Image 1 (tube, rainbow, N blue to C red):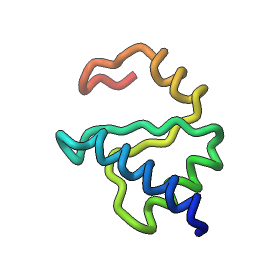
Image 2 (image 1 turned 30 degrees about the vertical axis):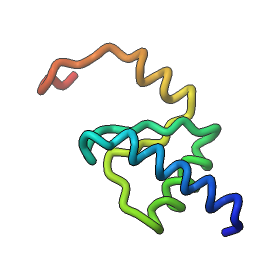
Image 3 (image 1 turned 90 degrees about the vertical axis):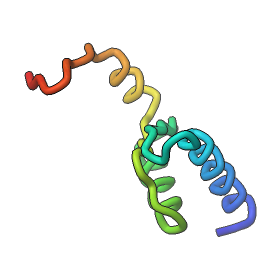
Image 4 (image 1 turned 135 degrees about the vertical axis):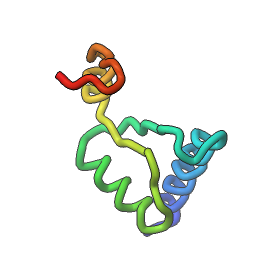
Length: 77
């Protein structure tokens, strides 16, 4: 991994840590340009640290997720 890539991974790690500062179980969503980029980032970060409740979504996936009606707890449809 070259210096620029390592620096970018380090910055993403710092942002994830900041997002989970109150609790390491807080959900952090990382918006990626494509699913392949999400897989690459997840694997790249996973080699240096564990990831808990960190999700990688494309903008389309995130919009779809936010547009879904909220389900009541314990209710399956």
